[in-house]
Image (cartoon, rainbow, N blue to C red; front, side, top):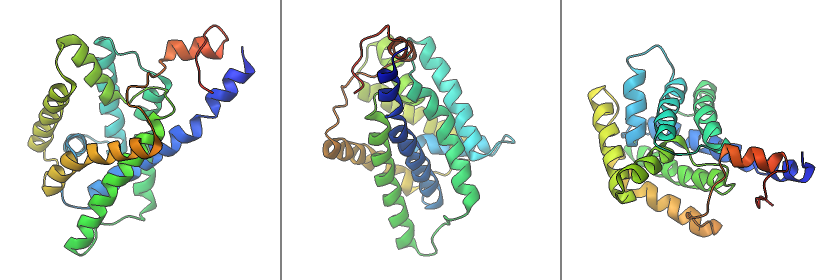
Length: 224
């Protein structure tokens, strides 16, 4: 076991957890804007309305299913992938239980909350991806499908999000102008956050096996 390697790894966990917390906060704001959610949010709320689980628990359940499919398609999850699946859902329920957020009374304030949620999710994505401990389950599914079918990322992402949006809508998920704005602006928000933080989206991430070897001193990865 390498102490220095453990210190380097643990030094990245706060940024990971902060990113996941902000991501959860962004999702709650997206919901409470009352203008419609992102495609995955629509699916989560749609499913939640038919099962005895909370918003956060439903998000965790979907994350587990998506992670399993991505893994079966060849995506190697990382520590961050597992943390994403567990903590975003837990943080969602925690934030909603606090009761600090409510749907604004005026339409203008609803749009402000919606746009702020998109900014927050963009910053959150940067914070948890910059540590290189693994992308989220949904990105893992996309990577697995891109590898499986040898199609462009944009095509696969579009098909995935359209599919989950339709299913979520049929289940009663909240679709509205916010759904369209989130779909159009979230990628821009993430890209701006990456640019400000000087994060290269092509930077390789570390999967669980590589992390294990690194922490036990068997691997030679640069986490410093």
